[in-house]
Image (cartoon, rainbow, N blue to C red):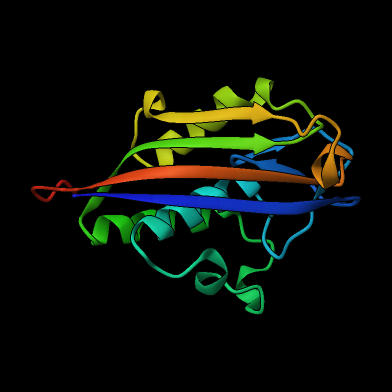
Length: 163
């Protein structure tokens, strides 16, 4: 049995924060505002994973009202959600994702993002697509006020226990 999930996230760019996307620190004068490290790509992937299993969203699972999640590394949340997938008897077939940012340019960072995320999620980098897009200077993203990400995740039920 296959399950598909769609994830989306957006965070405002602000002064005084590191820019963390795809599990790596990106050199930029601003970072993303959020209760956690505000990693939009990982958050979109997490929501897609949860959606594929018809589970609660990231905000319900990791509420911004809980101080234990303040400034948490999003890779930690990703690992926890991946464990839920395995507990339900699924594995990730592939992920297709987009990072939408006017600046900074994401392309130089994508190989390292793929390396980190494919390792955490036990998938081949060939099964993980991360694409960089802009908003052609339109809306909040295009005006360099925010960065957004989207992801589609395909899961398949394990026929026998793989873990």
